[in-house]
Length: 284
Image 1: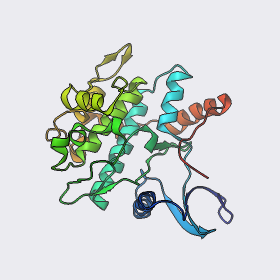
Image 2: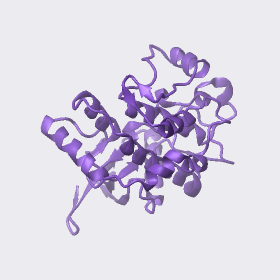
Image 3: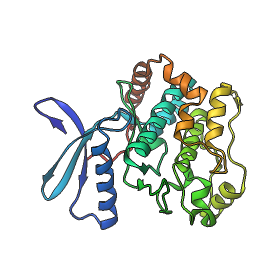
Image 4: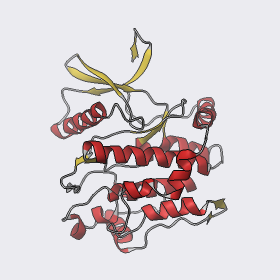
């Protein structure tokens, strides 16, 4: 959709009047979060909403692709890797976005994964999709069935531990899985054939650990330390955002002069030329 006066191209989410109560609740939660987050540069921006044909149309900032599509194209089609300085900027933007949600809105995202991190040609990196975000009560969330299971932290999957609730450190785990995936080009766990396999491996097995040499891919000790810190299995020992923001890798990455725009544009141009689908979001 284009705003005629400003010529701004917008992404539109259409909330149909026929959606069920659960889906409507998720869409409204997403709307509430983006409306309250307009002062955060790491969260997709909200422009406005209108009613048309009985449906609600939510107008939001248009990004160019998701990190999920982006990294898969780089590894599978370009046969390259994402350089660590780019991984650093993605890490900084995501941690700052999650910290904003916690400190300003008192909510937990609960669905951190590559498809919910967006990029554009201007070099922006932004978090999206807040439909299943949960309110923190005394810094604890209790809903168990929200989120994408492969990225869920052990304390959210284990029925015994989930009863007492969980906090933002469960999103820290999801961030660690996400970073390991986009850094190596593959999901850190083997494919599960059932929920029970996932339950056993994530809850009872050792957590994934990044090394400085992953099948010929070399990473700095600082990046390895950051990812593995996010993937500490015991949630009480896993850091929250304030400690992550003080991590040497995040501090170094925040100060680094990296032309994200040039890098993203180069990859997107290759995606366009190859006819690749650049988006996963539902944009009518």
